[in-house]
Amino acid sequence: MTRKDRRHIESFLSVGEDVTLGMVIIDQDKCKGCGFCAAACAAAALEITADKKCRMVEEMPFCISCGDCVAICPEDAIELTEFIQFHRFFRYLDRGEPEQPRKF
Amino acid sequence: MGEEETKFKPPESGADFNLVEDVIYGRRSVRYYKKKQVPEYMVRRILETARFAPSAGNGQTWKFIVARDKKMIDEMSEAVINVCKRAKKFADYIEPGGEKKEWRAKMLMRRMPNMFHPIPFGAMKFIAEGKLGVWHGAPTVILLLGDKRCPGDPAIDIGIAGQNMVLTAHSYGLGTCWVSFATPLGMNRKWKKVLGIRYPYKLVTSIALGYPRGNPDGYVKRETQAVDWFSEDGTFKVVY
Image (cartoon, rainbow over all chains, first blue to last red; front, side, top):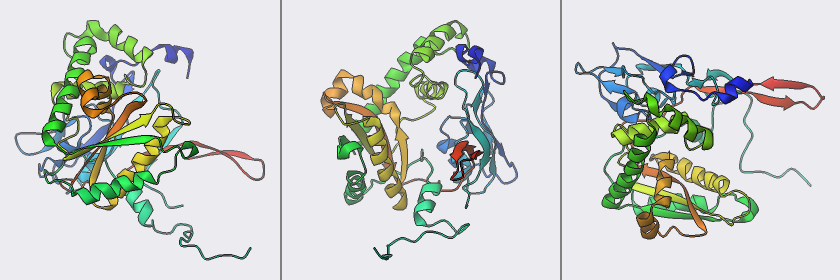
């Protein structure tokens, strides 16, 4: 972590540059709009639209990539694709690729 | 000394997860609860597992407060929401027209990087806006207090005791969620009096407990972490 990074605190006003937010992809064919995922979301990032489909909120979804929506979805329609990362002062260090629980 | 029979056997390499591992990997935070109250004996059983948690110097310097009165939990949530609303008014720079507050928010983040980390900062905003609950309608809330005079760090002991409770609760089919947004109650004069939080106790965190709606259990992907590994033969490697 460089000195510049340490001096600079991330701003949510520059998402993409300072912060990469988590992201889930919802299989719209499988989604039945039950709303469990939106209720389980830790960051109010999911919503059910008028036509009974789940989607991420349009205005800055604060996804923290916890995976609770993936686990609760009864149709297995949600997949976690992007993991939250900060790029300056709050950067998570020493991270590898995401994996399921492994059996060594 | 001869080899004695132990109750537990080591797994073969690549063997299926045993029951304990399954409880650990399958537990997810629950934010959607049924109204049905958890029976008292189950809560007592869960608290009992905390009593046998390891602690620094066997200090056991924790205290638990169980709140099961819906009205009381709602009032506590209200108090937390009010604190979040005040903090949002002071420092929410994300809302439209709030760009001028950015320096204030950044000052808080610099001074108190743990409390005002961007993630709890976002959660605070959502709680203030009513998009996120505090205890998510859980019928039982356990507040975890630590003794400031304990050997070592009270937060570590409470973390260990709390994890015992959370995993036991999951093994009973209950849902739990760690809620550290309870801490403002420990600074509120009214709630300090009602809950009896006084020196040497400090409110550290809380756990929401109840029957989950839907089936929240399941394995998910998590980032792997780098582990520095100094081997027996003197070599060094990093494993993930």
